Structure formats: C-alpha cells, structure tokens
Amino acid sequence: MIRWCYLPLLVAAMAGCSGFTPFPVAPRGIEPGEKNPGTRVAVCYNGLKTTPEEVQKLGLEQCREDGDTSAELIGTDYRLDNCPLMTPARATFLCKTAK
Image: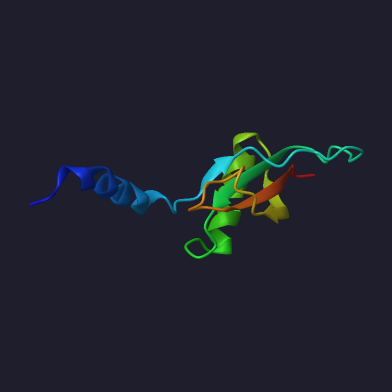
C-alpha cells in the first residue's frame, strides 16, 4: 500500500519524464556596448538527452516563425536562471534571411 505522504514524490517523478524535452526561451540579452546583431532565438535543452542536430532544428523552427530562413548558433550558456535544472543549457541562435 502506498503511503499518501509519498504521493507528491511519485507525481514529481512521473512529471520528470518530460523534463528533458527541449523548448524555446528568450535569448540572452545584448551586453552594454554590444551592437544588436538582429533577430535572435534560444532553446533550453539537456546535452545528455538532446543531439546538436535536434537543437539546431529547434532553433531553425523558431527563426522560420519570424520569416527568417537560417539559424546560426552564436552561443551556449548554462545559467540556471535561464533554463531549469533538467534542461540547463541554452543555445542562442542568430536568425538570418536569404539574400
């Protein structure tokens, strides 16, 4: 018989199964004195569960929503105030239009 005090732990463990799924977030801010490079998008992901190709694909999908046609990786950071513990990496992409 399951004790009721363990129910929140069980629910949290079951919810954690989808905790590794990459998702779009706000890109890193522009540093003081830095020129605005253009439209940027970002993706939080777990490097142990997500391939670089999957991250690139998600960045490209985000850029295409804005009408741009390519996504160039411009940086990755691991600040936990940007992405949760299960997906700690944030890849930032610069969206470029076709010329």
